[in-house]
Image (tube, rainbow over the protein chains, first blue to last red):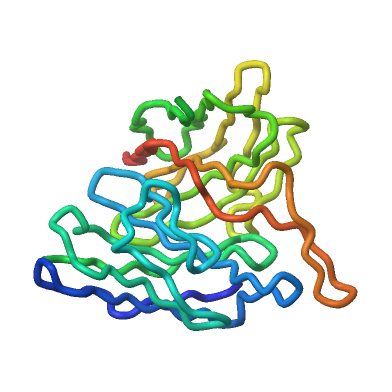
Length: 113
Length: 133
């Protein structure tokens, strides 16, 4: 299985400041034929299911605020929140969906104010 | 409204059987793969397996094959996750989730080809399963 490793495990950021979460895969999730990275980001708030934020490493899901952005390629990816809002407090997960299943998630990054 | 509605929380004893459900609505249920995802307290989600309700084609993670059974009844737009003999270690939140793609995508790296199901775009609210004597 592809191992997804996030850093840091937890992060405290002031309101209005930038938050950066990293995700590294144990092997490339770039499909060369389409030049697409099979990498998604999810946000999970307490008592709720995960919510899709970003897919194909950098495409924002409909309705997701534009302060959320994804970048990276191959094995190294980043989720950036440009100006942290109170409602962004959550655990964030990256997930690869490139391999033969199972599709694996990172261990999560707990984002606090 | 496009949604997945899961059955309620369960409290069971070790050795008991259990089936939990996930009903889809607001979209063509038979055309999208439904996954079951386990999340243990304080841990990341784990992909357990998927089913294509249109023909009940099923695939399991090696970690869960033989431990659970995934099934579906397309006449009532419902997928199921079933245990025949629960263990305390099965205590977790279980989510159903929809893979985004209708059908599947074929990926090929040279001569090696396999099916791909993309990311999750829709989640149920989860069913908490507690197994305790």
